[in-house]
Image (cartoon, rainbow, N blue to C red):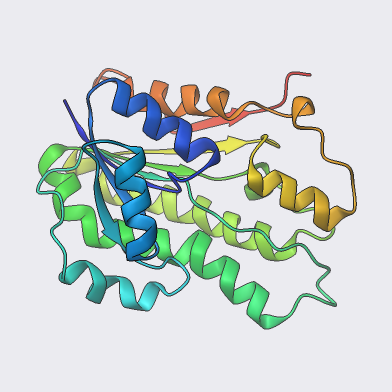
Length: 229
């Protein structure tokens, strides 16, 4: 049984991954933004442990984690949480840029830094759930895409730096997936949302679990998942 820390376990892809790992009897560590949310996650996932930390304020994560028990050994760190705010470069305010960069890029980098000792002990794996926007930026997507391009750089650098410590690093690039975030995107785009048109979160979860279940003689560095209908 391995130990896995998941961000974004409350809904969408993260919830499916947490449910599947729980069904396997794995040890779950779930990140929550506050104590109330942590209690909700512990109730939802029996036996899970929680850490409290606000991804929107990555400068305080070190202090927050310093006052909580961390896993001694960590088999995987799954960065699944994220935020999106669409807008043109001419209209997107600094606050929207900073929020997306903090949650999507800086916080994952800081959490990874803080948990590297635990990952090194277990020769664990870091999975970054990126986005198609981490490979290409379209109109209205500059802020979000910039944060996801940053995650791609973070993953590539981490892979090179931690290879000798036995840490594997995987980036998953899902296309549009039927999650609450996708519903918000459609609202921002002014389009009707039909979840049946997009990838089921369970399909992305399968890709993530395939990467972490891969035998140690190999490493999946990148997975691109696209809608099949």
